[in-house]
Image 1 (cartoon, rainbow, N blue to C red):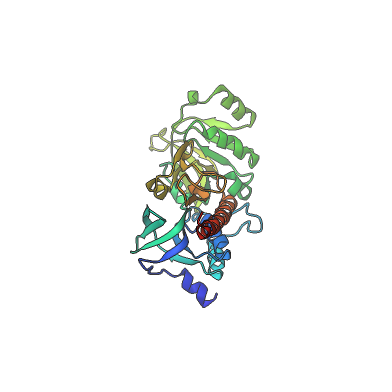
Image 2: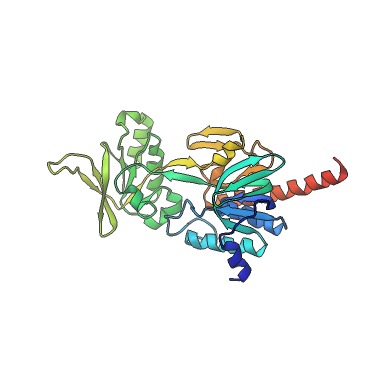
Length: 330
C-alpha cells in the first residue's frame, strides 16, 4: 500500500472552508463506486464514511461476479485503495447536518464543514430485527434474511422462517428453492391472516405451518439447533422445533435523514420511505443524488455499485455542461 493510500484512509481534520466538486456521504459499494468514477473523471471528490456497513455481520458476500465469496471488509478495503489512486479523499467521520444554497454544506461530527457543488447520499439502511431472543446475536451466521445472498451456503439444511407479517409467506415460499425442509413459524401472525391462496401455495411447496409465538432460539456448541415456542411445559419452556437455519425479514430503516433535511421528495413503499429519483439517481433537489440502499430497498452489493457508477458518471456530465454553459453565458 502506498503512502498516499494510507494517508487517504486515515481520519482527517477537514478544513472548514474545504470545497469539492462532489461529496459522497457513505463509503459502501454505492458510495465508493460513485467516487471511483468521479476520481477517474478528475473531479475533486470527498467520501465521508462513518464505517458502519450494513453487511458487516456477514462473513462473505455472494452473487457479485468475480467477487463471489469475498469478505465484505476486504471488498471495501479494496475499494478504498482504488479511489485513493485517483486522488479521491476519504474522511472517517459522520455527516450530522447538511445545508444548501449555491451548493451543499456538510457538517461533520468531528468538527468543521465541507462544501461541494454536488452531493451523493449513499448512507444505506439499517436492519431492525424482530425482538426474539437470540436472533440479533446470530444474524449473518445461521439467522439470515436473503436466500440469494446465503441460500447456496446453507442449502438442503432444515430451514425455519419467522413471520413478521402476512407478507412473510413470500419469503417462506422463496427459500424452498434451497431446501425442501421448511417450517414457517407464524409467531405473532394469526393463521386467519393468511389468504386461502397463501395456504394452498405453502401446502403445494411442502412448507409446514406452525402457529404460536416464538420465544427464542436453541443453540448448541455455537450452532442454531432449534426454534423454541413460548410456554407449554411446567419448566417454562415451550416446544422446540429442530432447525439449523432461520430466515427472518428485518424491518428496513432507510438512512435518509440528510435527504429529508434538504427537502427531497420522498415516496412510501412496503419497505420504508425512500427518495424519488430518476434513472441516474438524481432526486427532486438539483445537485442532490441518492445511490444504493439510500435510494431503494432491493439494492444488493452489485446493484448498489451499479447505482453509484451511474450517479458518478451523471454528476461529471452535469458539472461539465454547467461550466461550459457558464462560460458561454447560457
